[in-house]
Image (cartoon, rainbow, N blue to C red; front, side, top):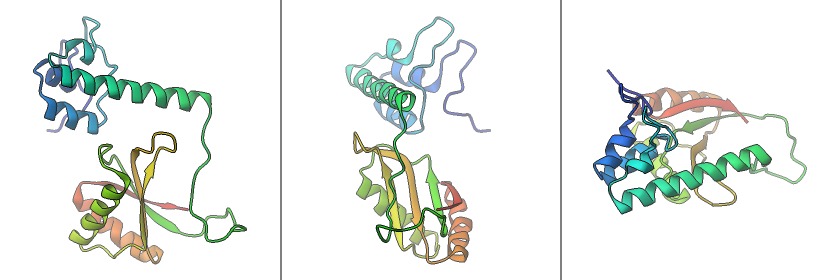
Length: 177
């Protein structure tokens, strides 16, 4: 049986709340990477930050809460245009192929280390080698967003890679671009 990262017990405490109340920095970081909600409240109305017993853990939660608040404000105020690589200035906006999309990736890696890690995982699972791997970064903070794309030679290679990588536990899907 597998629990969701934001599931709660009968007191409303989430795994994040329990980890921070024990001062477990490693568990806290893992749960935040897994997109645990820092704003969840238990039945007493407490949030994880209210339960933090360690200053370092409290600092991690504050950083994540600030990141989430900025993200909500940006999303509510405007949406940024998609930033994509084009082959020429007059390139058509028409979708021309398919690519592999990775979701739920670690937010703690730099863009380059995340791209290198994906290359290694692709190779390890004997998937066709990609032409390009690109981790998506926030244009303001320049932090990774937990999503990346891999472009393969053709649609058949992309689908073979998807099939091979589904065994890796990564969230992968094929999408047009």
